[in-house]
Image 1 (cartoon, rainbow, N blue to C red):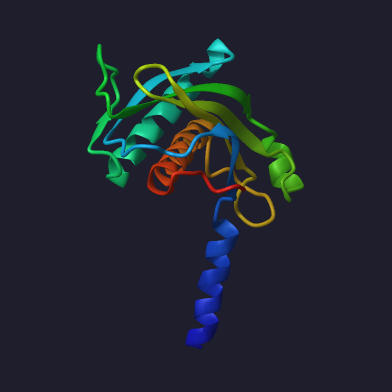
Image 2 (cartoon, rainbow, N blue to C red):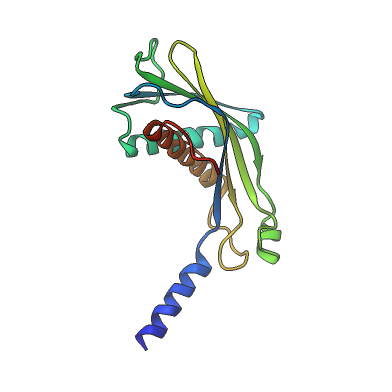
Length: 181
């Protein structure tokens, strides 16, 4: 009886879980050369004015996750006149936003109607020397079984995009490179 209840709870949990995926593509990223002790979260811009709230959500997600990681002694969210010399400056541009189709996610499932948001991220030293660029994409295929109800909206997806960007930066700072996906 207990085993049956456990399977029922696990099955219900899996069917109600939201399916969100992340993709990171390295365009060019140098190995981390020095121990950066600070990170400056610079400008987050967009290709479309209507996406500005998503850029702000991604920036908030990035900053919060960087603070949570404790990888850097200082996380500067509001850039100062002169950032510390041992800092890395991160800027990003939201390049694509697609809300997908809630109807397709609900009726068809299996990734149909997937919502996604993509940003191009740049890391640089305070002197302007570019350390590298990478692309981060977060997608949401729905929840509740094969497709189903939407548990995440685009604002949530933008925040997850920022968090995934932070995870990538932390991995780069720890290991000197970003794992290929």
